[in-house]
Image 1 (cartoon, helix red, strand yellow):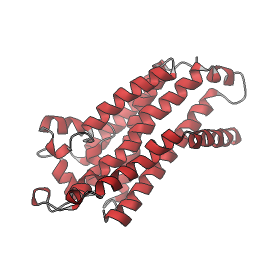
Image 2: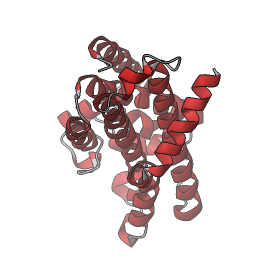
Image 3: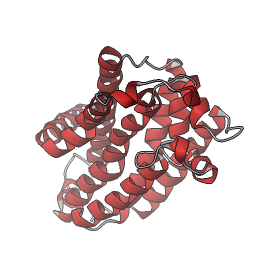
Length: 254
């Protein structure tokens, strides 16, 4: 345990020195939401959305930016860098096993997305009058399980990428694909039903996050009939387990 705590402290310092990751992984979701909230048209309610404002419906999507950025871009790039520089191999000859580095990296990454989410939810409420999640327990479950699914996918990238450059390229592709289905580039309410239905089962399970945050927003963004909340959670959990197992099978220390 002392070795893990020491490793967490080291990884935390390294994380905070990475200004780009802090900016885009932790602060960007809040900045993006506040920036969009400054547009008057997005703060107007509409009968088509059950009198909700566009900014209310889009808030969970802003949250997803940080989750995806950290899980599929930051973590794999760091691990690939450690492998490329021989750090993991050298650690295998010391009492600090490389597994401690991976565990510390995951702890710091998870802490960063929690801080990002807490900051965004608080300022969304304080500045834009967006109500906090209506179902906090279900929101936490959707958040944690959805992030675990993303991290599992990211760890497959970390397992196979030989260099940090390769990890960044894979991460960029995954980021664009996941954010597309998450509604970052085209609002989910404007997507064809087939894309929206696919998005309900693609990490991090934005539909489950949205429904837990606001039942009304969940109804607006869901497909006809919609998929049960706990079915979506089960799918995210299954993806997390399968992706983690694949990553563990493929992982190489050097």
